Length: 137
Image 1 (cartoon, helix red, strand yellow):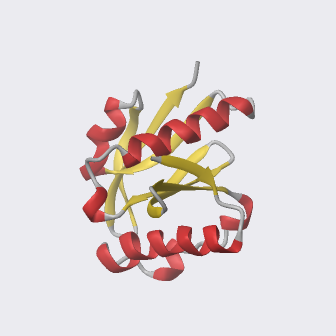
Image 2: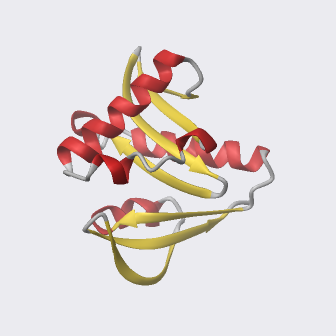
């Protein structure tokens, strides 16, 4: 598996296709919420197995978001690879704390990666979320 920063037109299209599949089609999130106009300010990450894109995520300053893995590739280390790449990149940019709003059903995944829940459960796109934080060393 490899994780890259999406730069080319092909890589960007692949990135948005993953997010569309997971968030808009699978989770039925409104496209206007998913594509919030911030992507041009984000670092976009793509995960590939062989030459097939299987996951995507973004980093907006110190906020991780839009972490998505195609259903058939879940539980295969894709999310962990994406998060490892984001954390490594963040460290090179002098970012020492990452935050994210985790969908509640996947909180344990982020717990396992060292993120700590902070605050109360809240709704975003009609889905329960919790804010999580991790100090990078």
